[in-house]
Length: 104
Image (cartoon, rainbow, N blue to C red; front, side, top):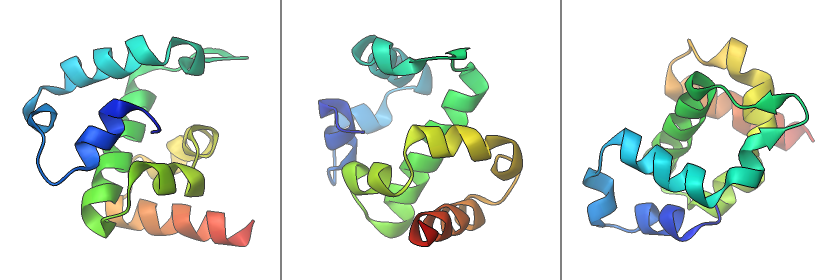
């Protein structure tokens, strides 16, 4: 969320926005190998896909940049809440994630 890829995706227009999700996931994964490894192993692709989807949806829904979004809901928070939120409407999940942040 602090990478050049995230900044490019936050811009009003960038050709990366039209790249497929597999390409973008590879781009992020290659830049953040250390971040994707946790004490419990490697993040599952389904969880990563959902986290990335919600982060991008959040940006387009609220217009917030990636850095601000990540400050409100770091990857650990996203992973912890995945099982509850991944079946929710993205707007409701974002509102709940914002509420979690505001309670801290």
